[in-house]
Image (cartoon, rainbow, N blue to C red; front, top):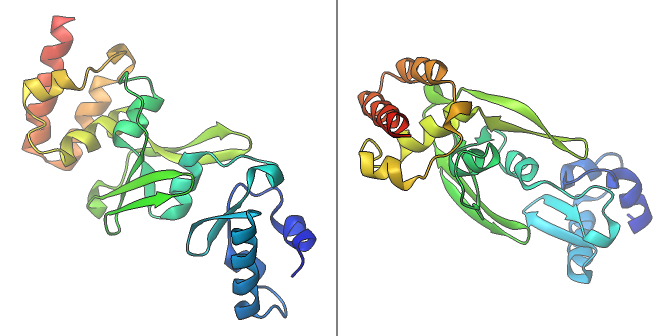
Length: 206
């Protein structure tokens, strides 16, 4: 495969999987060697095995890291601090992209950033939506209420008022407390019920 042919096939894709190139008579071994050469020459960036993006000079679309996170693990959505920052509910910049997945937990360090995947039970894999994140890209992101619920559920001791305060939650008027309570009831978690009472206590202090 020539470089011009690869650009023709994947030029508009923010990221692409090598399987996209294996149609027709292409020898997968030769293709693998060619991809490795392009990575070494700096034309391609290998995010992980089989997943690539064009180097910046060749990109028509810069990959959004939420988009990349979804591609790294199909059964996942962006949540916890990453989603809370996206919605303006916490003031801190979150350098790693944090997602939840029904698959195994994993932390990936890639040339375009770090991605953390936390395991969640299948019956808790809900409360997310497709969000337009620009440049014709979209990503599965937790609803604001579910992002907070996921964080509280997966963090030990999160039903402590001191932990709730340490989150420095802001713009809480944008949260739908009724929807949050409905989501918590769906989980049947006593810990989350305790935690939301602490959030309400915090709200009453504002």
